[in-house]
Length: 189
Image 1: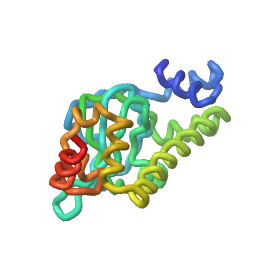
Image 2: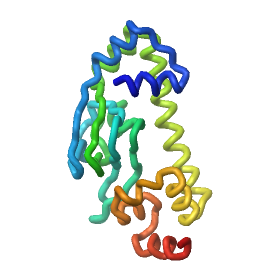
Image 3: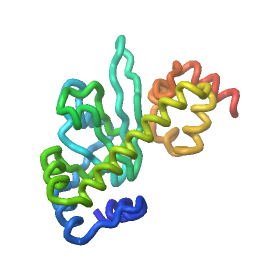
Image 4: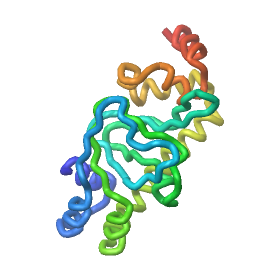
């Protein structure tokens, strides 16, 4: 989990060896294969996961169509966060789009870290801020940018995504049909 310790330090979270030990001992390494459903809609999310390697997506099904709400990449948090926080059924599915390695801490263990460590509380706050900013950025993008602008932004930020993920998933993430995505791609090339 050294990569995670480095991630925390990069985000200006100083963590003592004692607090790191408390936090890291609660995390469990888990591997998923491409196509594995990590969480199904209606299940309660019990884990806050941090991706060591791989790509995943969160999606839900509406009128027999899968709609992708979020892609998650290396060194990002992977969770149905509202379900995790509220201990309520998830409104989405979580799927491994590639082979995936994550470090997971379960809800009860995380609460214990919060109780025993002020640095644990800081990690929690930074986690919430990170997830909130990603969600806020996506909402702003939907309201202020065209589908083509969202596509170009996604290409710039995650160029490897287009080799890893089916275009139909990218289309639903961008809020367009696969045919509209094809037209955007033709116009740009």
